Image (cartoon, rainbow, N blue to C red; front, side, top):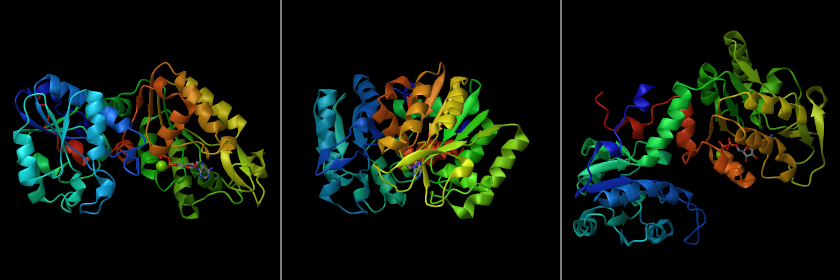
Length: 399
Ligand code: ADP
Ligand code: MG
């Protein structure tokens, strides 16, 4: 695991006068060319501002969406350049090419403290293939490489991994923060350490559960995935979302927890409805009282109380995956209650996962958490205990 923590950062370099290739994650949601959420742009500002102040010639690169290896105006990063210029209060030059003569000319025109944004790196088919030739062309634009794209760190692509064969690679401030906060929680947590895992499916998160079971004191399971565990305990869960092929895996995880003295907490009551709809009739049901025509869409009040108590007693809490169908108010109480309990924890609180982050923002408690990860898939793979390619390729600290 130490591979995830001994990397070099902006503190290890002097960027003055250097052409600095910064791989950022500007993969923002857009509708008709308008940015609908610029969280990821704001998250990249500390690194960009620092490089500007320290006299770097800043070359920004990112992917946006899935343009399938060819130019597609719908996936242009041009709107991001405009938004960046607003935040930085200085011009951001946009290059319609991310390699070749146009990009080179734009880079050569950059003076210390000036900023350039290259067009979507995925307009090149070689990006997602980690094509060495494309990586070399990116590298030719710069003297130093800074990876600040935690959200893309689980992919070995030309601009996240291949390029580091040619340039010294250090972590940007966002990357550094993501790795340090989550790394510390996994490697050296203040205890009690609790993980809350929920969301739709067990299959997405088996490896996360397995890895975290080794490290935590309490593991709380909720959301749709809890149903498969309840089935493993012998309860009938009606029309609930279940993965019958994973019942034996769930049973094995329950046994593993028992054998290792960890507390694996499962729901002891549920909110059930007869339809998957915001206005469906619903009721609280004990585990042995779910009718054939009912489905579980949230954890029940007794479960909420037990989970809140576990969270309240903890000094480190990691949460991935909503406790219920939080998009519908009637089934959002479990998720809200966990968010509230986390907000009151005196210690480290970390949230990862796209829907979990959306949930915490909906509840308005994001500011109360220690860390909200900007990487959905990347944070999941990090919690699985994997070394991410974008992290592995950073220069090591010699100490
Ligand atoms: P994240 O993006 O945070 O990792 P997931 O994608 O794994 O989370 O799961 C989020 C989804 O799980 C939400 O859309 C939510 O509605 C759904 N979900 C949660 N509980 C249930 C449930 N009991 N039945 C069906 N879907 C559920
Ligand atoms: Mg999700």
